[in-house]
View 1 (cartoon, rainbow, N blue to C red):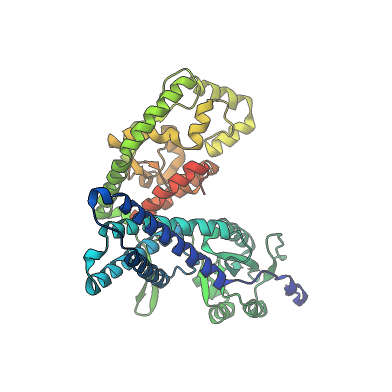
View 2: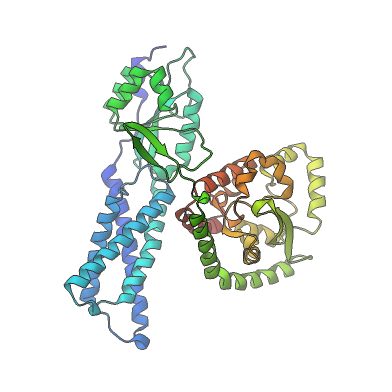
Length: 484
């Protein structure tokens, strides 16, 4: 069925504003670099009575200026202005690498041109550490806030089968930080009746509509059909896409091994893609163990103090034990007893059976999510502990006993093993985590199958950068009570 030329007028959308988008990101980076430097100077000033020395105002200003210029140049070289299509973990890596390189280069310039004794090494060190924290935080906050604006992001066209386009549209809209703004859907030439939706205008894919899309200054298309199949079925349309758009992104099927850290490979002119599974490498597994030890060492003392305070609150709130233990599946499918704060009434299991037997709809919900919304078994303090994820804090003892990691997949119950299916061998290859990818990307809003999918994604694409991202985002999830 041919498109109606008059209907092309429905393709209306706010034009992209790339200069403004880049300006917002630059101002964010400069602001948080300045905050990091200012806090470092303030902290060093406080230490003058003990360490001696003085803060030379002119040198501090010149140092800040050099750091700002170097950081902006290196971040731009990394492709983070505006950084569209880059997921949060990759952006975190890019920013930390750019900031670290910028500080290293500036230190080299100082060493070669002036007396290094005039500059405070403590200010330099703290500025670097705080910049690695503050600048990514500012970036993530800016993307979360400004991605809601109509002018933010690049207009893109979605190409594929009708239902696949709808699924892709929802995924792209959910992941706003990528900076893609779907404005039109182009369904593949078939004998079907044209698909209609309120999400965005739909047209049958042909040469004419591709020319119109290009004339509207749309430079990127997202295609749900694999390139080999697309070229075979629609060679002319494939060539037209190749010749008219700067960027064509082909959506791959779900893979059972890692692609996040993969790279393209040229084998005598034949394109290939190298997939990488880091957790199969004993060196990277050893690095994860060291990272877990570091995270635990940093948080051990504050965690023990907080556990003591919360123990008193739980004890005063309701009768029963302070801690709750439950058998979970650990490394190599070995069971262990997980430790949590008790957040439910003592007879919670019996109440659950009665609730599910009395309400078939609730039983279906529980079978899907393995949780109940507004669960009547939860105590007053328990609701607060769960919202902030503080009920998980006693698992620090499981980490000290070597049963869990600080970051890892979910600790599944023994009764859930049969529902995990063929993925169990992969899921229990490493220790479960106190926090993890599924908690910061979905938390209670996800179904049981989605949690498994998120855990598999984490295991297949693991890296130290992913653990660092989970570590920092966990604090946001605790405060907001949300997993995205």
